[in-house]
Amino acid sequence: MGYFDEMRRLRRQLLDQYWPLVEPAVTRLLTEQRTPLTQVQIQAVSTLISERFHLGKVDGAYLEMLIKRLEHQVLGFPGGEKPSGSSAAVRYITIADCEGMTPRQFCRIIRQLFSQFGYQGECHEEHWLELRHTQLAKTLLIDTEVENRVIHCKDLRWLESRKKGNPNLRAIFVTVGSFGADVIDVCNQGQVELWDGNQLGALLDRVQLPPRSMLD
Image 1 (cartoon, one colour):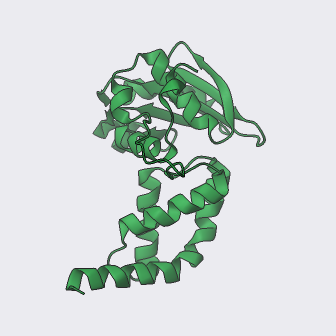
Image 2 (cartoon, rainbow, N blue to C red):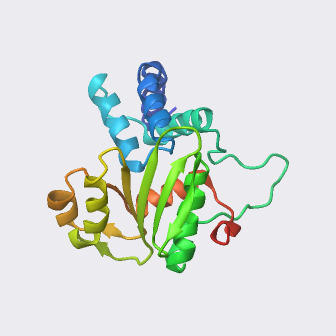
């Protein structure tokens, strides 16, 4: 076994050892938000493990596998598993597909995405949604942008104003593009969750929505 293979084996062995100590906190987060972890949240878990247990580096791919398995247990979605008995490639919605959608189609995709985790609601004005969990007392307000561009402070004003009027509301801005430094460093101040194209793309890869979702 080569040096790098041996190091990877040791990192995964240590992660298996420490994961049970972190799993309850990740479970609570999944139970509370009722959606899979974003890439930012996964990175935060990786940093927590690295710092708490003094690990120089966490095997990211192995950690994602552990998190995906936990998401399947807590949220009850396939989490990337392929249908048994089928060797044919299965087509799912990707972030590249989203970039070619109309605002209404993209809004439907986001609605279908959250419906996998127990949220129901409608699209409004082709770009925003108000969703409520079918069992938990949780409400989401989601603003969407299907154009692949940089989102700035002015784009968040409407969502921030709604959030300030209802502190119990979970507000999310979802875009296939990215967020400018002004949004990240200055204007948002934690009022709105930011989901960029990378985070959305990773989530779509894990949930695997069929193409018909844009029509539902």
